[in-house]
Image (cartoon, rainbow, N blue to C red; front, side):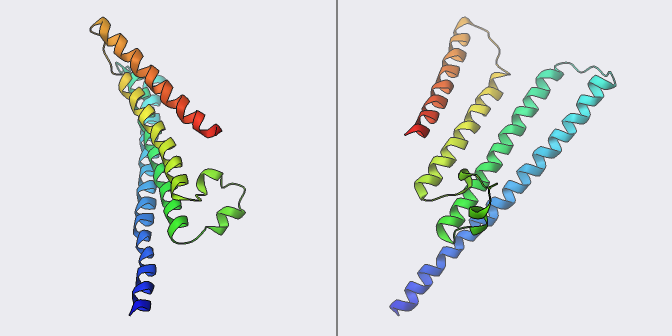
Length: 169
C-alpha cells in the first residue's frame, strides 16, 4: 500500500503539465494577437502618413498601441519562463536547451527561488511599462499632479535600480 501511494504521489507531478501546456497556449495567443495588432497599426500608419488621411491624436494612439504590444509580449515571456521553469523543476531538465547556445540563462531554471527571481524581474518590467502607458493619458489639472507624476517616475526608477542591483550580488 505504501509503495502504491508513493508511486501515485510521485506520478502526480505530471499534473503540472496542465500548467505548462496552458502557459504555452496563452503565450502563443499573446504573441499572435500582439503581432496582429501591430500589423493593423502598421496599416493605419500607412493610411495616415502615406495616404494622407488625417487622424487627430494619432501619435498618442500609436505610442499607446506599441506600449500595449510590449506589455503583451512581456506577459507572453512570463508565461514562457514559467512553463519552462515548472517543467524543469517538476518533470525533467530540458537537455536540448542545455546544449543550445541560443538558450539564454534566463530560460534555464535551477530552483524555485531562481524561477521566482526571473519572473519577478519580468513582472517588474510589465508594471513599469503599464505605468508609462498610463502616464501618456495623464492630464495635469493642478500643480500637485506634476508632483505625483514625478514621485511615480522616481519610484519606478528606484524599483529598476533595486532590481538591477540585486543582479550584482
